[in-house]
Each structure stands twice: as structure tokens, then as C-alpha cells.
Length: 107
Image (cartoon, rainbow, N blue to C red; front, side, top):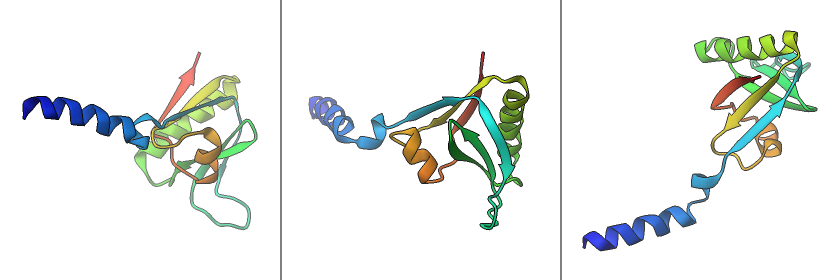
């Protein structure tokens, strides 16, 4: 019985798509904005490499930290890394309007 657990668990992990899906999106922010014109979204949005990424709702404390990192990168001309744990690519993260799991300033 014990050996069956050791065999079944790795096989289940092998076929789990979400286990391996993650996207790291790098770029120098060109714009940081609140919402979109006409859409009236209450999101902080950053543009990296021509794609818009949502950082979350401005009332959320975590968004204030994410926005602070992105604004620092914008002023300093430095790269940021947005990590999305459950997205396969940066394109899908942008088009699905997913909020990143982490935001890092890249040296």
C-alpha cells in the first residue's frame, strides 16, 4: 500500500497541467495607470513590452506594494519581473487580466 502512494503521486503530478504552468514576464514599465479609458475599471495597470497587466484593485494593500515597485522601476528605467503561477505565458496573463503573484525589481 505504501509503495502505491509513491507511484500514484508522481504520475498525478505528471498529468497536472497547473503544476508546471507559470510565466515570468520581464520588462521596463512604460506606463502605470488607473483603469482604462472608457472601461472604468478600478485596477492599477502597468504596460510592459506593449502588453497591459493588472496589478489589482487600488484599495488592496498588496497592490500598493506592487505599484510602488513598478513606479520605482518606471522612474529609474529598471526592469521588473511579474510572476504568474497559473498562466502558461505572458500573452495569456495579459489577455486574461490575471493579477501577478509576485512583482520584483530586477537589477
